[in-house]
Image (spheres, rainbow, N blue to C red):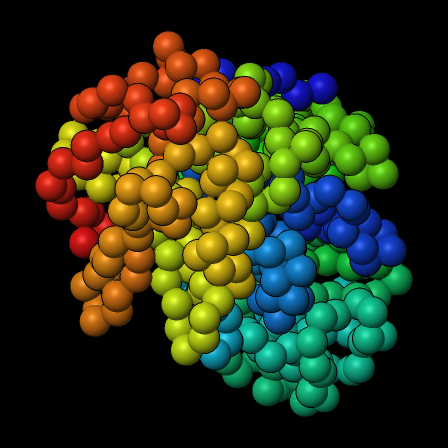
Length: 418
């Protein structure tokens, strides 16, 4: 089972399969999964979905999991997207690996003349030679002639026919990547495509070290990803081949195996079970921050918060530390109350007033948000104040309320609001 990191462990790149890892066979997300994802993200880890699903099949599940920002890899690595609720589609395509479908389609029909062929129509559904059962493909289907299926570069092709998996080698000889999905199903993508190469591009882009990578999966298409990760974890229900490819095995999805791995990435000296979700995420963020921390919130055309992040001061520069998922849709007053519940203090207004003193920040694109410095309270039950001294720099004696007061120096920001 998963082990626990110390609070000094660096930010992790966490790649998670969807079906069989975060989503059960009944199509439901196991209880506690979203909460565990939220806490891992609040700790500063980069959580990335890595799935064989097409983009249209990924999007609703990502929303269900609360992952409305960050990155995702889909179509077995052929597509990498940035999740962005600010755009109408909910995503921006970062990388698409396409190939000429004609040679492999012709070869497939020679080998299995009755095979159904589906070519992914990115963000919409599939162009198909014959209709597939609706539960086999995500999204809409459009019946078109085979010649039209071969006319445009493809990200992914699905082949469905009895026993078609016996033709893996013959189809791979055309130069494509072939991934079996059972005896009667094959997925085809461009040469060299896979979850692992796509994740490696993202890891490099985000500047996270190779040893700080974690991957969790249960399928044949996860083999490369598990071998790529510094810590590859197979789900308990995975086949023996997948289990052998991993560094460790967690519980099955019914045993909340993925949740156990996510919880192992949190500090071992903090308990969030008795806290509200918002307070728990703030507490985890404070315990994993590497310097003085502030919370930044942004509004759209309503009173509720549309984005909520923690930022930390490193070498005189403010950098984004983590999202606070439960802050989205909350109010500034709710955040103040949750901070107190988490054992955090913040600057207040005039003497005798309890309300927080928020200050304005700008995102460089004409939007104004609000920032609230947060620091550990002297009587915080989970705080090890000796080891937390890096999070606060008292400039005067503690107040009668038991709060440590902090001087926030003039700073500049990098990669975000100023």
